[in-house]
Image (tube, rainbow over all chains, first blue to last red; front, side):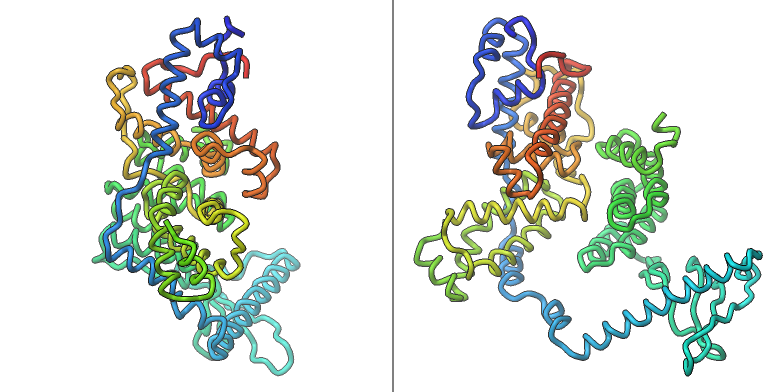
Length: 267
Length: 186
């Protein structure tokens, strides 16, 4: 051992706090100046990390955190306790189930007929419904949302996909405001909306410092929360193109190769 | 630091005592989370979650471990739970955009060393980073980490190995030693 340089595991195990010094590593360090220097530097780096502290908080921010912990936002409890909100939640679930059911029926119908999709020609598709219910019509919409569901003879009553419900970026919003709003969407449990806002930020402000960050955020959401590797790969790719030399690039490249291993970047 | 009397009253639901306890623990909570999450917006979000967990868990805190240990465990669990929602965007406000590979050890001062170490951590996936910080920075043992994070001990070791390789390689590059770490016995 004394003639062989210690590997990563042995050296860091040797310098970490609370470790028992290894005789073999000690013997090597006694004879190898380069490893001795490196071990000292690693030890100093670990100590620096252990002693690092974030910048102090402003007094009002401290108060806000403490108040937030002592009195959780009423909305959180209201969702659990208010019958009216529960009724709304139930209604939303019913609508979502109906939309899912309608999508399944449409899919089955189109596959069974093996005909070109009538949606491509904007022809409404009338779906069978349970007895007593009004017929349901699926038709293509001009927006990014693939389709809207409407009762026959009435205005569309619901759009089923998250994209249709996503908040739009307003023209006056700055990159910072968009980023903050995306964070807010994320914090309130709407990752799909957050991803859209992050992507909107990068599209509108491609040269801003937060654009690569936003794309990376969107990519991670697509990959780990929304289960959409294709969208994740696209966002990683755009982020890499915007900022190939940034601190994020290595992570973005790894993300791209996880979600799209055949990408040229991964060869 | 929180006194025994404050803790007893806080456990009984005394609002003023709970507030005093939270104020007393806040710096420690943020310092612990800072090591896992860096100084970005995640820090405040997860700090809030930890404080909420403390308040929720106080009535059932039996004092079998020190308050600091209990709070630390909550911090670790909250950071761990947060790892999939958020990404590796740690320390972005402190990470140097560019570390001169030609800079020698003597040219990097203590502050720069911290920045480089943080930059090294920022490049590790959250799951590996948290394990690395717990083990190599805070000095916890693998069995304890496995219990706290509810993952197999073998997983702790494998993530630790990968993180160590990445950290050492990055520090070597920053020192201008270049290339991968020297081969050797691991």
